[in-house]
Image 1 (cartoon, rainbow over the protein chains, first blue to last red):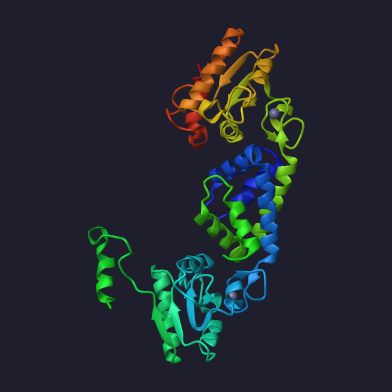
Image 2 (spheres, rainbow over the protein chains, first blue to last red):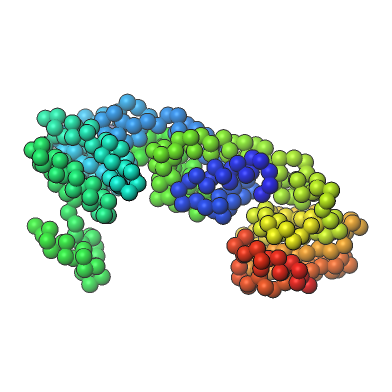
Length: 195
Length: 195
Ligand SMILES: [Zn+2]
Ligand SMILES: [Zn+2]
């Protein structure tokens, strides 16, 4: 792959997370040999998203407007605020149709080793929002990873100190699964969190 | 991920080979949250490559010109013609610096199940080139996979029937592997030991 604009394409593709030089070459070959309309489409989608997408001033998720669709929806229960790490996590919760409240999207998680602190995930904004008098309950729905748990812990402690009711998504046995195939840690948590 | 241009970006990223909906969301999140310059860069690189990159009229590899750099290079030995599947395979051979001839890049391989026949990989063009009186030896450097071997076999038989000297990269390249993943030394040895 010798020429200028081909090398430039391979280099640009390598900036995508999880894409090394081999995958980038494969992607460039595929687009140029088999899917030029796809290349044009992706080019336009990137330019449009990069210039149009900003953050909802209320919940921080991606949107093209001042406020996202969810925050603008008058049907949503404004007394419940669910804290998630990313828009993809929010989408997963929305697909359950089990939550009618609003969200605060951290757009990340606390990660001291990567230099990501409270400011980077908008915690001051979250605390102001949680104490605005409308919110009655904050539901922590960060991931059940080490960093997600640590983030939930920090937020939970800070909100409790401000007198806010805080809950955490229950840890437990996934629906539809058989106990003998569930790992011990999950069963132990489900026992502790039994209700 | 609710809004229009964000969904459009995720959908466009999914056209990349090996990218499912989760990776596409991850890529979109990364670019919009952490690397907007990367998104702009990739957008431009895609548009430029899609409109500028064409095929070398002599060897069929990607180039921005009528002829690619290799075909235009007067230092290359025009009596030797090396047949490879893709520009990435050609690049792997070039990195060994063990071959000074020219190339013919099939931009694919024979694959009857996918409907890819001799026309799709330019075999008539290859045969015309191999019998132009300048080429003294054709070196088959397709991959050592089932389809690569079958492609080499078909080309080899056709060229031998036309009285052309044909060699194949020596075994030494482990069977079942693809050239772009093979280390330089192995490829260099296989070139020297070609038969
Ligand atoms: Zn919002
Ligand atoms: Zn060429």
